[in-house]
Length: 342
Picture 1 (cartoon, rainbow, N blue to C red):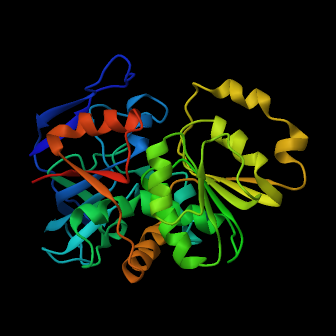
Picture 2: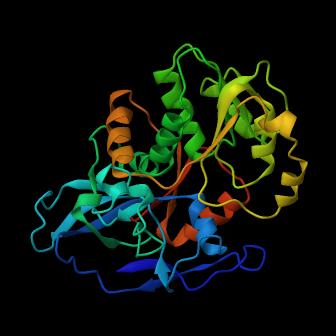
């Protein structure tokens, strides 16, 4: 099978083609696993974190990709949840121990043995992958393969972020950064909180225009002051500056939810501008999002189908994975980027 593999970490300043096309054996599903013939795989900012070493894979080479859609092409021993031909999805959570307190409470995302698709094991930048059947999900018929792919991470992590924001209808919600995840959060929030205004902070004028097109009541730059202070803000950026700026715009007791696996270090000195009375006083809260649990993906797929939520997508071939990643790094974004295997 064809696959795009990462052989080691590097900076995009020095290497615009970190992935190489190779031919690999088709994986063989083991006990309780299924083989997936991949049709589409979303491109996520977390892949940039893997490539640049902020959350490096433990072993190289590795096949990246954790927003995977495809058909069940084979069943391992005792795998019974799906039939061959079923259309399934795979997200960032590849497996967890299933025994610890976190897993027993449905919080596999913080399990000590959490394994990530496309980092700890081979992922979906390939024609085939295997996965434990309990960590795959039926894809609702309403979505095309490309539409479904970003729902599995950008959508699910956005759904978890919104749940952690502890919002009530009528309260103001801010989104800082407006890429694949934030544009889906805006769509979810408009459905769940029809009386809430949604305010978007983004560096790019194109992103701000896009946000207004999707129903944001206001869109400004990262440093701009919105017309009112907000009850919750969800940060989906890789930088520190939006975090500090967002804290200024919260009401008393407001909550900032940081939706990022890692933060880049390029603007870490911005944290030195953190001023307790301005940014944190009056019982403001900061909440991080750690991975996703199976519940997040399952619930969000059902919600997205019911609304329905359809992501904006840009398609690339498997061989164009490097191009898609460079565009993501350079913030050339409108919605989500998706690799198509055909």
